[in-house]
Length: 80
Image (tube, rainbow, N blue to C red; front, top):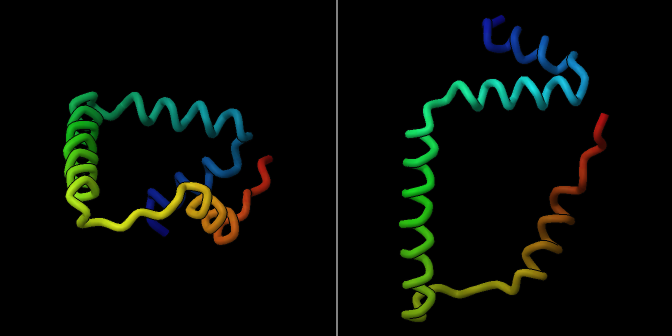
């Protein structure tokens, strides 16, 4: 078993609150520049998609329909 798998299994034995705290601590260990780059790339992608919609190159689906389909496909999970 890999070290990462062992760590994951150990983490999953923690309480919900402790898993959240651990996730926050891991997130804090990631350099801010990583998140800045992701944000920049998403902003560019959003702009590209909006432009394509404005030019009539993309079909859209009503938000209510998308949410209904997602809720059907992925029902809510039970929390600890």
